[in-house]
Image 1: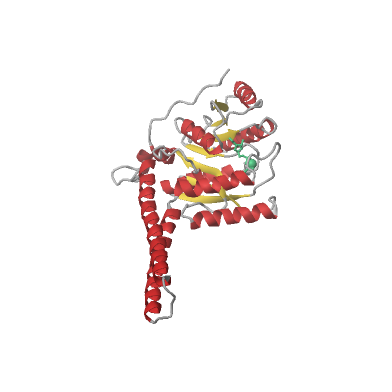
Image 2 (image 1 turned 45 degrees about the horizontal axis):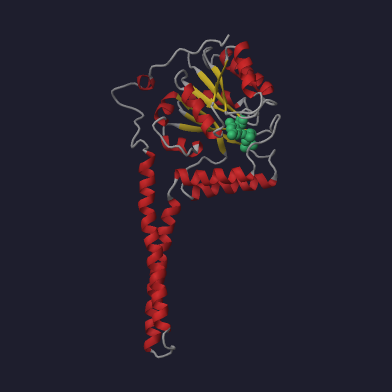
Length: 333
Ligand code: UDP
Ligand code: MG
């Protein structure tokens, strides 16, 4: 099989877990090669995200010992999403398919086999979806569920219980490279790219060593980032509330005038109520209209591709997928 797979693994201060999981990644890759699912030119790419411990040294040693390991190092810590993006953009130069996975062994490495099979059956994006959250605490389970529901309500298209364990073909990555935004929320962006996709479920385990870099505070930041970078629905909501408040204000004014002519008011009440109803409505409506323009400017500023063509009648699917690909890098030694 000549499908070249690159496994992209972001690493931040992972000296405790890397020696353990790198072995597991290599075993899985060797198995995939042996079974003819992927080419022997496949690689495991570690992205060091500006770690302050020995992570980069460990990656360099691994690359020296075994050519299946390669590494890139970010000049400083930029966060998980940027590290994954850096790895994917590097990998697309060499690989036909990439799988991004965390380096702590929480995502079931064995699910890669199902992902690669799904690719061979025609899917170009394969989302890894957690089948159960048995290993999570009740609190984590409840907040995670709320997180996905809220994101979808707010207009971010995310696959339920999918984090960043996914297979993506080179063709999708080439299209994805045209998404030039800097505020990244990868799991909400890949569904926007389109192409044939499917899900593969897997068990989520405990972290093999080290500790999580995503406490609740960072989860909330990620949720906010997810909504604000993929959707302008909150701004639409302000506009909708603005219209509603204006209508209520109008009703309030009519009511105040009617009550005034019925002579059941004290002096000054009608004019005060009319002014405050009018101002309340008009102000929120004005903010909503501003929001609509800001939302449009925001989407324009992202400079996202306006269309992506997946097939043509005058080219075969294979030709469509063809794009110059670099030779895989040799061993570092
Ligand atoms: N990570 C990264 N940069 C960061 C934080 C995390 O590259 O600034 C990596 C980390 O090494 C791991 C993955 O992102 O491979 C997920 O992080 P973690 O396991 O801490 O998050 P959790 O699984 O607890 O949500
Ligand atoms: Mg983890």
